[in-house]
Image 1 (tube, helix red, strand yellow):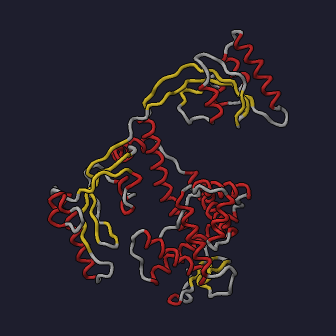
Image 2: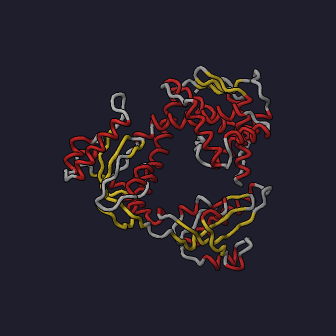
Image 3: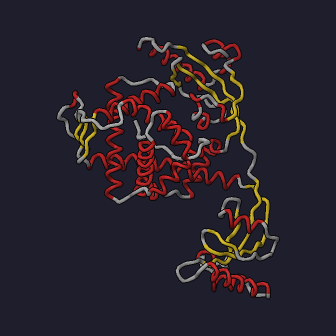
Length: 441
C-alpha cells in the first residue's frame, strides 16, 4: 500500500482528515501507554496508532467499493505506511525542514476556503464533530512537511527532455487532450459480496475471457446483450454520455486513461466485475488566446532603494523614452531583470497567466507602442511597452506542458519509491507484531 500523499489544496483532503480525526477521537484524546508494534530508529509505533490507521484504511476502501484485505494483511500494509511516515519525518527534522506558523495558517485557510468556510468556521465544524482543532493542525503540518521533504530531496531533481515529450505525445497524445465528456458502454458480471472465493474466481475468469474476446474484435453491444448482468444489457450496455465531473466514481480515473474505442481490464466492485468501453469522447475547443509581445524595465527595491526612489528613477527613464530614447539601450543599462535586460528588456510573447496579475493588468491596458507609467508588483517597480498582439492557438503548447507534467509525475513516482526504499534500508526497523516477534529489518 503506497504512502498516501494528500494535496492540502484538494477538497478531498478535508474529508480525509475529518475521517482521520473522527477515528482518533474514538481512542481518546490522551496518550496512553500501549503495546509497541514497531521501533523506527529511536522512535516507537504503538498499537493505538496502528489501530487508527487500520480503521481509517477499512473505511476508505469500503467507501471506494474496493475489497478490504484480511486483517493480518491490512495491519502489515498500514504498519509499513506508518514506518515510512516516521522515517520521512525523521529525515525532515535531520535536514532542518520546518513549516512556519504563517505557512500552516495559510494552508488551513485555503482548506477552509475550498470547503466554503472561514478558518473560524472550519474550527467550529471540527469542534462540533468532537474533533480537536489542534490535532487537525498538526496532521496538516505533517502532510506539508512530508511534501516539502519529498520536493527538496527528490522531485526538484526530476528533469524532462524535449525528446521525451515528443515520444509521449506520439504514443499517448490523444489521451492528453483535455476531455469535456465521455460516452461509455458497460458489461457487468454480477457476483455477490458474500460469494465464495470459488464463485468470485469463476466470475473473474469469465470477465477476463470477455475482455480478450472484445479486444479481438467482437461487437461490444452484442456481447453485452448476451453476457451482461447490467441494467443496460438490452441496450448493448450503452450508458450514454457523462460530463467529466459526473463520471461514476468506479471509473473516474480510468476515463482519462482509455483512448476512444479502448476496452478496460475487469474492474472489481461489491456488485461484481465490470468491463468498460470508452465508446466516444468530446474534447475542449482549441485554446485560442490573445498573446502580447512586450518589453519592460524593472527596478527592484531593497535597503538602499526605496519605493519612491524606484518610482522616480523609472519616471525619469520614461521621460527619456517619450523623448525618443531607445528602449533596448536603456533596459540593458538600467533593468534589474538580468534575463530580459540582456535582450533589451524583451519578454517575448506572453499568454494570459504567464505574469503576475498586476503586471498583466497594466500591460493589457496599454495600446500598441504605448509605454506605461511606473507600477509595482511583488518583483519591484516596472515600466512596460507593448510591441505587438496576436490571437494564437496554444493547443500544441498546452499539450506539451501537459506531457511534461505527466512525465514529471511518472518519474517522480518512481524516484520517490526508490528514495523511500533507501530510507527504509538504511534505518533500524524492528517489527513487533505477534507473528513477527523479534524479527528485525
